Image 1 (cartoon, helix red, strand yellow):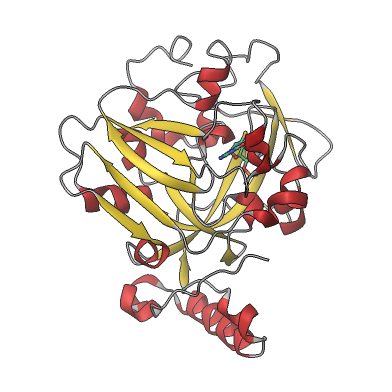
Image 2 (cartoon, helix red, strand yellow):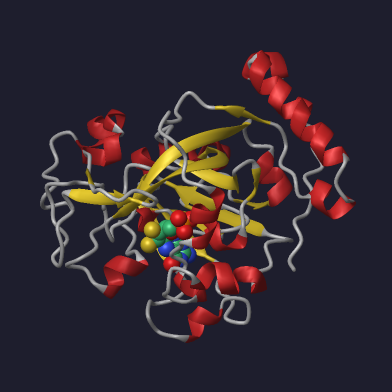
Length: 308
Ligand code: MTE
């Protein structure tokens, strides 16, 4: 089984607790530490630094951990929803490096410890709406993508951000099949990437990300269809031209660059007006931007039917 390298930083080095934690959050943090002390060393090591609860979280009921870790899309491990849970144990999430470069003043390669020091970790409970018509509510732990991008100082030519997943067929056997052009690639416009809702997630349900959810670090962009939220990232590049994502390359008429959740723009083969929350029987109406109206300003003046 892959092991997670314990972060060497104390939460106190990241941020004063008094600033970021309410008394209740602090209490739950110390309860977690006390619980960790009772566990065997490997289990105790697989803990995240302290995180605080974010004001950006939805109050909707969360999906269960079993649902979130047992029903996945991660084509590097197969195309069935149960494949990632069954096969992703071959991924080695430690040691891990993320190379950040392209149109930046300060290119830099970060290891996981350095990534965890970029900003205080937060629990963000977000809705995820998959393009296939299902949705979940997921308690991620992560930090704003903007905190990473600010470190490398994008130049004026860096207008888009391109993300790339690990390429390692011996760890990711699905990469031996040509269902997609590997490695998996996704992209955002720089202002989308800098939006406070866009995060890099390193945890789920208070623990390091399970392999099937994109260990050790993945993107989460809650107002876009789930496929934009690329998993197991090894490379981030600032680029001048709009990147071509793996899904757009596979089928440009079905998967556009923007891929904002939009009930008014049907997928060519099905309606996007409703969705089924995993665990619920009745369908619910899909909301524009997945209900994250605060991003609307990013698309002011754009025709979102043309820029789907
Ligand atoms: N990232 C990689 N590298 N490979 C993938 O196949 N699938 C995407 C996205 N990120 C995918 C990926 C799709 S289609 C969805 S819906 C989400 O991951 C699912 O995330 P989850 O399994 O953590 O819910």
